[in-house]
Image 1: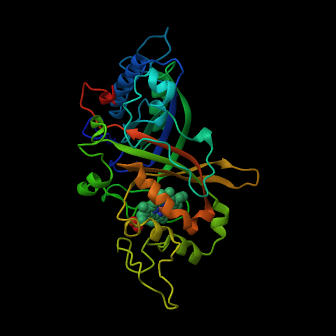
Image 2: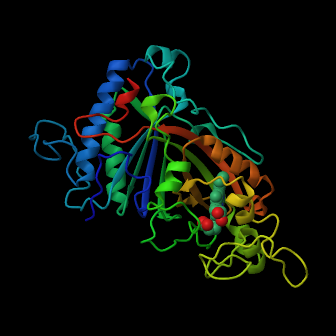
Image 3: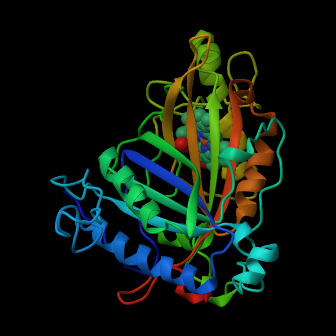
Length: 375
Ligand code: HEM
């Protein structure tokens, strides 16, 4: 199985070619956790994450090595499975730095400058129990069991210090971050990720994703901000919309993913092009027109979302959607794009129910621990 390095300039799981499965967890510190305990937790997590990404058990004792008289260190469900390209990415939420908690942890003045809860947007129907959090863990892998095992064992290690607030299971990437990958599809059936920032576009990454060398605070250089949005899709209404309407809403054709102004998938959209009746080929309220850098002062983000389906409602309708994750050097990039999407024709078919933002500290070298610069 493929192994991605845990140590490096930036954390893995951002530009890493997007894996097929996600298990995302947001945790809150318990009300008595001290600064020393938080540091200890981050040290323990670093060590465990470095091991698990190599396909090892969470500790030397592992699932059975600790003897019959102790609960096993490792929960065991990944025994015999390959590393499955596992990446584990950690982040800090605004609440970690705020109020009494921030003061208790000695972090009040240490917050990455742009870290703040997102504002509310038109059409938001945010539920608090699927939003926010002090810490986050994004585990991505080619095998869902490997991703779940990682989060489960990390949350066990946090026992008494931090507790899971919400989690999200995602299957099927809705994005590409490497030119070696083919473009996957979201649950609307459209190719998703075509115009994403790719891992080999280092100038674009430096401009839009990584915080700069002179970032504020300085320890946060080489970090980034993660925005997560749980977006429900009203699948049944979408499935009753005509193909032509679906394509007009996205601004691309469904089969090839080509812009409606013509060409193939990677042809740049021509927003000035008009059809036979004199209307814009790419409609004024289409998603791609509204989200495109040309219409947003050049702004780009790195998208890394996943499909989810979690049961159904009483009417037999699927409870499904897109768990949207984006990385940007300033959350304002997401805010500007999401505001631009206010007139998106897609809004009739989606509902944002979860929101979160996390500061993702830079990568570390061996011997260091995640977020070390913060303390
Ligand atoms: C492009 C779907 C939410 C930002 C696209 C494309 C699709 C799509 C099919 C075209 C292919 C591509 O370039 O990736 C969706 C769906 C969403 C959703 C189904 C919700 C369920 C969002 C949100 C944002 C966003 C919340 C940011 C606020 C973008 C951007 C592009 C894009 C920046 C690339 C535009 C370009 O440069 O051409 N999306 N999207 N999307 N989307 Fe979304």
